[in-house]
Length: 437
Image (tube, rainbow, N blue to C red):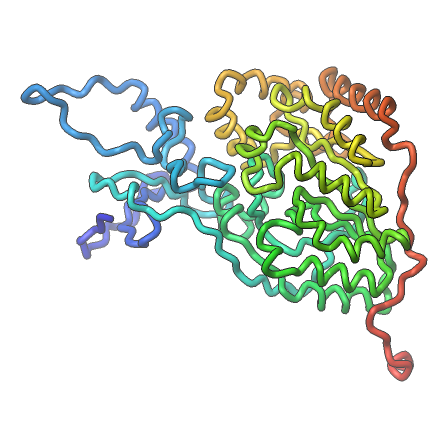
C-alpha cells in the first residue's frame, strides 16, 4: 500500500479540524483521523458532496480513472470509510468497523489512488488472554431472573448483527462492529477463579446464568474448553446453572448436564431467531443453523435436561411472523418452556443493524424502524427496566398476546423447572484451624 514519504509533521490542527497523519500499518488502509465528535458531521458533509457531484468531464474521449470507493458497497448503503469490502468480511455479520465511542479519534478509510484497499487482508479471528481477577458478575436488574452470571469470553465469533453485547467492546478500545466478532478475549483461569469464589466463607448460592452476554459455546470453545471445566466445578459443588446458547456444541457436555439435571442443578435454553436458513446465515453467520438448534433441543430434552426455546430477538417486519412456527417446532422437539425478547438496539447496535438491514432489506428499513419506535416510546431504544425486554404500545402488546396464545395452545410454560441449591458444598474445603482467625 502507499506510504507517506514525508518526514515533516504539520502543526496540530485547531479544534474541530481534521488532522492528517501518515499511516503505515500493514493491515490498515490510509486513514483520515478526525475528532470523534466531528466524525458524524464529516460523514454527512461528504455524503452531501457525493450526492451533489457533477459528472466528470472527459478528456480525449474518455473519463480519467478515479480512485475506487472506500469500501466496495459504500454507495449502496450510504457509509463513508467505515464499511469493509465484502470479501474481507466474508462469514461475518456486520458490514462496518467504526471506532469505539470512547476513542478520541475516528478512523475513516479512503483510497489514496494506489488502490491499496483491495490489497488489505481479510478479517481473521484472533484470541487474547483476559487475566481477570473475578469471574462471577453481579447485577441488581429487577427485570431479569438472575443476580449473577459468568462470561468465559469477551466478543463472540457467532457474529449476530443484532447482539446487544456489542457495545461492550468499546470498553476495550475496539469497535463494536467487526472487531467484536473477530478480536476475542478468553478467560483461561475461569474454572479456578470460580472454585475460589464459590468457596468464599460468605458466599450464598443462587443460580448462575451463563451465556447472557456472549455465547459460551462459540466456535473457539472447541479449542479452549473453558465451559466444560466450569461445569465440572459447578457439578462438584452442587451449584445450579442456567445456560443460554445458539450452538450445538452444548451437546459435547451432555454427560455433565444430564447428571446435574437429575439433581435439579441445570437447565438449557437455545435462541432461535428464524427458521429460514438463508436469513440466519446472513444475520447469524457463524451460529448453528436453525435445524441444528432444534435437533439440539430434542437431544437435550431426550436426556432429561429441562429445555427452553427463546424466540429472540423478535425483529418486527423481518422475523416476527415466524413466532408461532418457531414455538411449534420447538414443542415438537420436546421443549417444555419458552420465552421471547424484542430486538434491542443500544448504542452502536442501532447503526450496525441499520447498515445490515439497508444492505439486505432496503425496502423495509423505514418500516422496521417505525415499528421499533412505536414499541420504544418514539425512540430507537428504551433501556427502562420492565420495558427493554418486551417494549410497549399496541404492536408490542400484540406480540405478547400472540406468544401467550401459542404457548397455551402448545402446552408450553405449564410447569416451571426451578433449580435447587440444597446440594451446594464449597468445592474447596476450608481447614478447621483457619476458622479460628
